[in-house]
Image 1: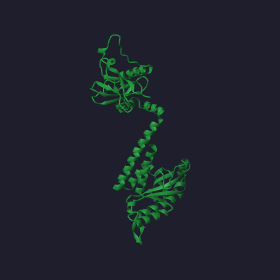
Image 2: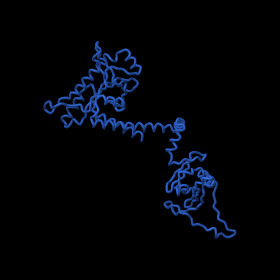
Image 3: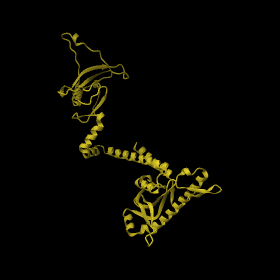
Image 4: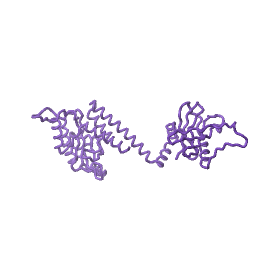
Length: 366
């Protein structure tokens, strides 16, 4: 167990230590009460102190110094003896050796300082300066320090990495929410944001983990003239031993999910919603019949264990705040629940899933 010491500065060159226990019984103990004197000329003359008997009547009371004995009243043949057993003597010797290693600088009147012994060589570290010390060690040989930490406590580096990842993802969620409310990003900017932070998709609507294969993926459709090529915003794949392709298309969060009332409290579907569904269905068909069958593309994907049969598609579009009554809610939800492909998710639903992913990570780390 590491040895620790606490002291409070009494001036810029002196400090008083908390009592250092040498031996203890139920109601009595012997302590070393030491004082630091930052002797700049002779380091060996930097500590003075007293051995003090203390007692208390119960465990709930604080220790009290036993009344002083005036040595001037000592008569010939009398003696005052403070006895220490082997363990107490060792503690006294160890404490004094530790205290002599303390730095002479950094003392401030009224300021508390904490020290801990790093090893049996009595090297001490000022815990109030731990950040400064760690930074100095990193600057001197950061690779060696990290290698030492990895060997002694490999979990620390993993914890630090997970904390850094959590903080970064929390920042991303805040950025997501900010621009969703501001509606100041176009489709291209949202596509870049999701492409940079693919963890937001994490799992699709059937809880399969998704990884990005290609951003702005060519799915086919090119005519002889070179026109008519089709580009999906993101080509993703499920994560497993065998991976299957998923196409993602991104519209704006202010894209209208619904149009005007058609009749009897049933609403027409928004132009961007219908167009996005039709576009993705076309992309999926083209990808199956053309893009995925190109010799080089097929070879590259299968090398990564990515295969195409009937690709799933995901359309990110709109915001549920547009569904202002239960009739609009019913029209939208019934449409997407009875749609085989693509799966439709709104921006605010995606934001909540990203927020949940961050909170889940924090809970698993705590």
